[in-house]
Structures are given as structure tokens and as C-alpha cells.
Length: 408
Ligand SMILES: Cc1cc2nc3c(=O)[nH]c(=O)nc-3n(C[C@H](O)[C@H](O)[C@H](O)COP(=O)(O)OP(=O)(O)OC[C@H]3O[C@@H](n4cnc5c(N)ncnc54)[C@H](O)[C@@H]3O)c2cc1C
Image (cartoon, rainbow, N blue to C red):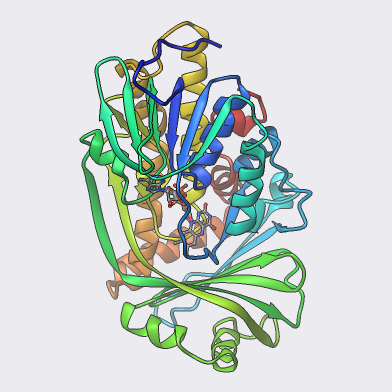
């Protein structure tokens, strides 16, 4: 693999520097390094524990398995075989219950749900085995983009020089600012409470999303008789619910679930996430490609966020690898434009769908509720439409190679 001329003042040099060691950054770095690209991954972990779980859909699972990160056989991941959407708005116009079964489209499972701590640990373990990947546990404090290269300064005073930056540094992205890429953001009057719990009855690998007038209330299976919950509430209510004693919170959750899993016992760890939607105005510019939440933030509805982020990761890795194999400059404008063109429609369409669904729940506007009800009614009743929605939801047609199980 080609390595490019080195900036002599740099402490480290690489073809690519990935900034941010969250799941999107780790996946990008692993994909690049596994193909032999000399990659540096600069990341500083958040100090607060992440109690969230991530439902990874089949394309993402295939990509990670192809990179050697096993999910399907992991004792930490639970399969998602059935997904139910239940209208719990108690409004005049209500949608019918929609039930998606992976077997209907010939899949063993739509994907797997895994706690973020286990996902990050598995990715981190893989990253540290790759000889062409230099994992640097440091915070990036400055990024300087030049005509032929980019230089990154770390909080320990060292610097890394590369041909392209992959900005995977989350929603407050320093890389995005350094590349002069604007962001359009809208805050929702909603926050998500996350908590995991034990339950009496088995979940049968089923996730149930109750649509309420304050937002979704989503149970997702974990291994054993355990599940995770994402409970979307108005900001003034979420603090009150999160502060309840364990017994009282367990009762509230059982009530929200209409007792489908029997008696509930919450596990330690609760977190609140204010919800917003954000979109970078460009996905790449000035030798910088943005992936994951540095590029787009979507509310946690329908498990889209990181699944989009992993498709970003696989796409930019594929473009950079192909470019280097052809002897090109991976940070050149044409590569960043190809990245933008490959990802824009997928990101925009999913953000729009999630935003519309969320607004239709919150709105008292009858035509909007009617449209949601009709859409879900058609999906429920028309088999080919339902199967197309399932296929597109889990594995969109236009996928990078990794998502199809092909090494890059
Ligand atoms: C409640 C909730 C539930 C969700 N559930 C799902 C789900 O089921 N399925 C799904 O697909 N998505 C889900 N998501 C979305 C998913 O969690 C995010 O898309 C994902 O965590 C984003 O990953 P990331 O790597 O882009 O960013 P992050 O996880 O934010 O990682 C960014 C990393 O960069 C580091 N960093 C930042 N700045 C610097 C710097 N200057 N120098 C060095 N390092 C830096 C940070 O410390 C962090 O480690 C959910 C989100 C929420 C809020």
C-alpha cells in the first residue's frame, strides 16, 4: 500500500488519520488498516459510562463480521427476529399494529442488539491487533488543513500528519469546524431516558416500539430475560421519571409495556439524552470526510443512527482504499465529492423518515396522524410493500462492499 511523503516536523505520519474512537471511527480505522492502509486513530474516550444499547441491522452486522468483529456468535448480543410497532397514542385516528418478522424476507434475524460498552470493547480489541493501525489515546486539540496534507495536534503536544482526515468525533465535531463545514441543527422538545431491565416473561427475540403522544417507548431484547429501553419524553417529565426509585420506575416501565414481559426489575444505570436532528452541510471538504454523528444526528427511532454511521465508515474506507490502490490522493476534492454523492441520499431519506414519524406522533394535526396511520396500514396489509420496507430498513439496495460481506 502506498505511503505518502511525510511532513518532516510530524511526530507521527499516516495515509489517513481518523479522529474519534467511537463506533464509527473505530470501524473506519479497522476497515482501512485491514486493507493495509497506514492509519492513525486518535481518540479520547468519554469519562461517563454509556448505558445505551445499539440495534445493529443486518448490513452493519455483515460489515463488522467481515472485519472480524463477531456479533452473531457473541454472548453479549441478542438477535432481533421480530419488530412490532404499536400505536399507543389513544387518539381518534390510530394506526394498526405492524409486525415485521425477519423470516418473511428469508433472514435469520434483522440484526443484533448489543450494549455499547461491549460493542466498543470488541472494536477496540480488534483495532489493537492491526499492525498498520496506530491507536493513539489522546484528544485532538487542533486541525490544520493544507493544500497537500493535514496536520493534527494532540493534547500531549505531539502531531500527526496525513493526506486525509476522517472526522468521527461526534456531534460537537472539531474536524467539522476545522474544515469550515456548517451544520443545520434542530433541537426537539424531547429527551430519551435509557435503562436496561430484567423481566419475568421471555422476549422471544422481539422488539416492541410503542408510539405514544410524547414519542416512542421502545423495548429491545438483550441476551437472556433482559431488555433495554429507550423512553422518549418531554424534557420536564424525563427528569422526574429518571429520578424514581428502582421499584417505582420498574412499575412505570411495566405499565408502558402493557405488561407484555410480566414483572420488570430495572438494572443499575440510567442516562438522559436530549434529542435533536443535525446535518452537516457537506459530508466532505478540505481534506476532511465526516462520518457518524459528526455528519448527522438522528433521534433514536427505528435504529437508524449508527447503522447510517457504519455505512459512512464503510463507504469512505472503500473510496480511500481504491484511490490509494490506483496511486491517487485520497484527500483530493474528487474523492470527497464521490463520498458526498454516495452517502447523501441515504442519509437525507432516513433523516426525513425518522423526523416525519416523530412529528406525526407529537402533532395533534389530524391529516398528519391520518397519513401515518394510512402508511402503516398499507405496510401492514400489503405483503410486497411490507417486505420491501423490511429489506430497505435492514439492508438498503445501494450498499458499500463491506455491507455485502465483501472485503475492501
Ligand atoms: C438513546 C439512544 C439510542 C440509540 N440507539 C441506536 C440504535 O439502536 N441503533 C443505531 O444504529 N443507533 C442508535 N443510536 C445512535 C448511536 O448511538 C450513534 O449514532 C452513535 O453512538 C454515534 O457514534 P459515533 O462514533 O459517530 O460518535 P460518538 O459515539 O459520539 O463517538 C465520538 C468519539 O469521538 C471522541 N472525540 C470527540 N472529540 C474528540 C477530539 N477532539 N479528540 C479525540 N477524540 C474526540 C469522543 O470522546 C467519542 O469517543 C442511539 C442514540 C441514542 C441517543
